[in-house]
Amino acid sequence: MTDSRDNVLAAVARGVRVGSLPPGASLEHPGAPPPLIRPSDREGMIASFTRELEKLMGTVHRVADDAQAQTRVLELLDARGARRVLAWDDEWLRPAGLGQVLRTAGVVTESCWLPQEGADRTARLKALDDVVVGITGAHGALADTGSVVVVSGPGRGRIASLLPPVHVAVIGADQLSPTLAAFLSANPGVADVGSNVVAITGPSRTGDIEGTLVLGVHGPGDLHVIVIG
Image (cartoon, rainbow, N blue to C red):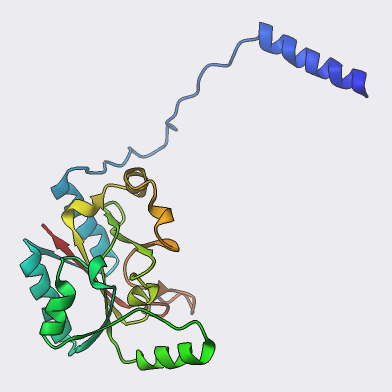
């Protein structure tokens, strides 16, 4: 058995020494579509992000500055009669001071904290059942898919973007990346700052029942992204 193995390996070694590599194949299949052109400039990325998210029935609100962003958040809450929101801690919200602006306007900002124990956890979730809007920031956004990237962790509870039927995310135009690969390249340690990394692409949707598309079954059915700048 050993002799046979040695003979095979010797034959392979001889072939490698005296042989030649086949000609390189073309990277592009002759029938492949032209490569996608992904904009990397700020305006191009905002336009792409808006176009892709609106295809998925999300809504993009572009505002010029922090003051306009705060006003737009209050307008969205007023339109739904929301006087309580489930929100990330103030330090993680954008623009800075948004949490205080909400409280000054009479809006109660509920923490994303949940007890670990079953009975207490159930009671807390029941108390939050009538909250219709969740407000978060984001760690980034992807122009090519219209996705918002959120990383859960202390002060950034997952339930803010999962539990209420309406999710409002406020981001800066400077947080846009052309692709997921570009985002991960620019944020190499992003997986280490929270318990999970999620790219939210449009409102929650499912087609499990008779292939009929239904929004809001597994999460918010209404997604608003406010882009500052």
